[in-house]
Length: 503
Image (cartoon, rainbow, N blue to C red; front, side):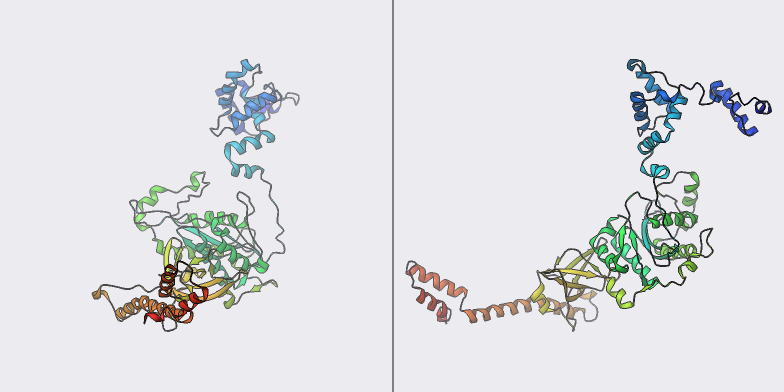
């Protein structure tokens, strides 16, 4: 039969099947659906040209609905109103052919399947000239859920709660910095960038990131202003394919992370069974799952595996690509690094009588200023308790100290003091160790010492001015006595001598 069809004259507009398999498929379709199923869609198919104006709008709007009607279901709805509206009948083939045209497909794909699917098919992309790129020309950071399951102290004894931030050198795709945390916030971004600077020993010429709030916070924007050469940094718009970090990260997940036996493979856009975990297998071996504490070592191994690999058409691996010599390199010395990786709070914070409170990543800290003898700095407290200051801190040294800065009238930050983690005291005698009791008594004495100091300052003020509570009483007694007509000269003399007349 296949040979016979191949010998038909060309004037017979019949399909020429390429092989036996496609011909058998056509025969099966004919047996199931009848002759019309194998007739060319161009032949007597209730021409798609009928689908115009109101008919076109009706069909397209029904097919656009997120319930995702099939073409057969759309036709049933169409038939239910066709006669009343005076519309012509349509065939399923005609509707399918019309919907498959690009100008309709662009609309229904966006409505039915969402922006991501639309962008896969129709999103325009920019081609970048990479021929003159070099190591550290462009760094990009991306953060997402880490697709690895860990042991957890819950009913299931397992969870996948960790987030990962990764800094890539875009030219070589080498991972130069990363951080694992329970939430993707500014402190995690900070640690990943700090590792990248420590690993590279230089600045990038461009730094990019996504719109996640941690990146756009004032704290991180301040760091990003200082990090790249000439301050070149920006965020990629949501949904665009312009972020190289996102594209590299997807391949990192697929090629390295998902190959671990405890990977849950639960990327947001998982579609096929190949990209889904064997949950039965993971549950069976959940007692062998790594703990959260082991994940830094695990991810370091994955980073090493990624960095030692390469794309198929590359001559060198990612480490070799990154280590290539280049005339463009902006070194960053250790002092620059130390000054760069302090985060400034964007709003001033009040230094209270009990110290300076600070909350980072949901954890509360309290700091106090001590003098060079490790005693509470009374002179600092005299000037700054109740005042508002800018707090500057290193997220990796929050248990040690912070910097306090005065915000001047012209917006400059002027250093005031370093504050240390506030001493905590034990009140139960049996639990006291070493000189803890002496330190407790020393800190308790601060309240009385400050009170005494300020009382003495007030008495000196009275001595200088003669204005006191007693002088106020004397003045008002004279006012009443003279019915409010005490001459000014006598009133001034009373103010001067009234306090001393009590003695």
